[in-house]
Image (cartoon, rainbow, N blue to C red; front, top):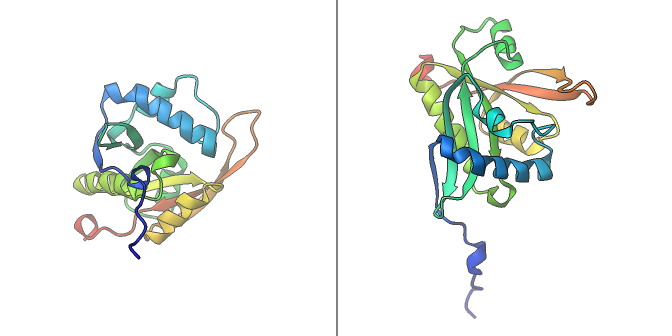
Length: 186
């Protein structure tokens, strides 16, 4: 008896990580809408979702695309400011050498294929080029992301509670720092 043949729809197309362009933003808004519907991320839909994705302090941004150039996810690397993961990193007495990972998401249909990790690896490589250690935060309800960071050796540097909107409930967030990267930490 021969092995079962997988239907073509079950075969994942080849994916590519590339720098995000301005022309990607409309498609990313659609991808983010899928994520919001499935996962509740972001907590509340922004008034200007393209602006929310774009951010103002970006050091780099990348997208995951398939063979048909469908946008499957994105990540940004941002300058450190007064964000809570940055404060927690600095409170540990660490050198002021961090950058912030944010706006990481992968559409539900493309999950479990390593895209989140590939996007994360891309942003971390850029952080290493800058001589910086990535930090990030993630809402506690996103257990899959928390499990991925722990599996990849990210170090939990603290937790905090945030109310993103006046009429929203408090949310617990976990903050992580990338594992020691020899090329930038030695």
